[in-house]
Every structure is written in structure tokens, then in C-alpha cells.
Amino acid sequence: MGGAPRVPRKESFDAAAADYARYRTGYPDQVVDDVVAAARLHAGSRVLEIGCGTGQLSVPLAQRGIELVAVELGANLAAIARRNLADFPAARVEVSGFEEWPLPADPFDAVVSASALHWIDPAVRFAKPARALAPGGSFVIVHAHHVQGGTPGFFAATQPYYLRWGLSDDPFFEPPTAAHAPVMHPELEDGAEFDSVQRHRFEIPRQHTTDSYVGWLKTDSLVSSLDPESRRGFLDDIAALIDSQYGGAVSRNFVYEVIAAVRAD
Image (cartoon, rainbow, N blue to C red; front, side, top):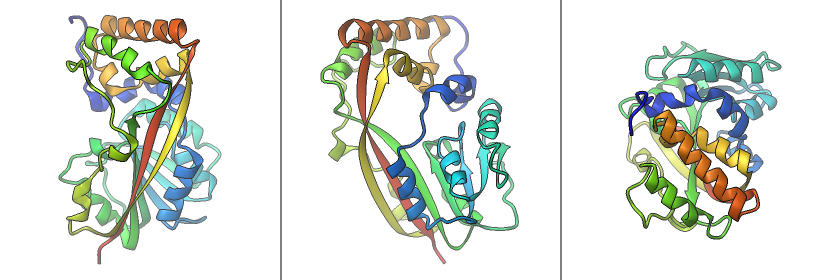
């Protein structure tokens, strides 16, 4: 596959910022509620968010009166997040890689990161959030796993297109069952930075039209790694599949994992 050079996967989200804002819907209410409970947040809590995107978690936190500082690598994503947070003067967004961002002198009550922490350099992934926290502060991570379920037969029907366009080399690939979704960041239990690690999981189906599913795929870092011609071909194939075989609507199942830990003394 030739054409324009590929955008590095970590940076690909910013290139798709408009689609990210339109098609990456916010986190389910029960996931947000669990983040708030796990971090013991309340109005006036001071929170640092790592990798806010366009504000999918930031906005519901700000709606609860939380004082939020969000750090986002992508300038386009950050600009949209600022617009989405415009009604909340206690929330601000700073453009920076988290690795380079200077920690303020005042510590935070909690550090949160949703669908972003796996992109952070492992050398600072846990150590820097620990330094950002006040004693007894909470670190909460959210990660979404694609799992089996949803519209019967749909996932298997998409696989020939992943093979055709070079997004997979495994014709027998299947997502895990909900019970076997991988445990994210198991090293958190073994590190010296945090204690009292808790994990909560929520299996939640997400409904899509052809437009919203293809739009969601446009924001996927693997799909974004394709050259433009191949990306259009792949997305056109998926759209035709949903329209022709599934009446223009499908669902996919996700397991949302909420991981919470307390800064070690």
C-alpha cells in the first residue's frame, strides 16, 4: 500500500479531531459514576486528567463542580475540549505531552485517565501521577475492551475487510469474551507508587448506525495508520456491509474497566 506517509498512531487522534468529537460519544453514566466514587470526588475536588481528547470524561466531571486541569497532546483535540468546557470556569485544558508537562506545585486530589494511559511512556506512567497527587490521593484509569457479543455475525463478517486492507493477518481472530477481557496495567499492583488497587468492570453494548460506526472507525488509530486510499476502501467496504446485510444498524459490546488506586505513603 503506497501513498502518503502514515501518521504515528499516538498522534493520529489529533488528525481526526473533528470525527473524534462527533463519533466518540461520552462514557456511559455508570462508568462516570464509578470513576467519581472510586476517586472519592466531590464539588471542589482538584483533578488532573491525562489525555482528555475532546472532553468525553472531562465534561461530566466538570458538571459535578470538579476543578479540572486536563493535559492533551493534540492541539486540535484540545481546542474542541476547551469549547466543550467553556461553561465551566473551573476547568482548563493545556496542550502538552504528559511526559513533558511540568507538574504544578499544588498537588491534586485525584489523577484520572480514560483510554489514554497506555500511550504514556512506561517510565513515567505511574511515577508522575503519584508525584502529582496529595497524600492519600487517588489514581483512576478507564480502559474500554472490545469483547464478543453485539449484532450476531457482524464481527466475523468484517474480518475479510481487515485482511483485504492489511489491518490484520489473522483470518481466525476473535475478540475475547467479557470474562476473558485482558487485565490492563497489572504492574500497578506490583509498583511502589500505589496501594489498594481496585478493579470494576461493566459490560455495555453500544448501538451504531452505518454513519456512526464508520465515523467511529475513522478515529481508530489502527485504521488511521492506513494510507488515504486504503482507508477509504476499507471504510467503504464496512459501510456497504452494514447497509446491505444489517439494515444500517449494528451493535458492539464493550467491557469498561475502571482501575482505582491510592497513592502510597
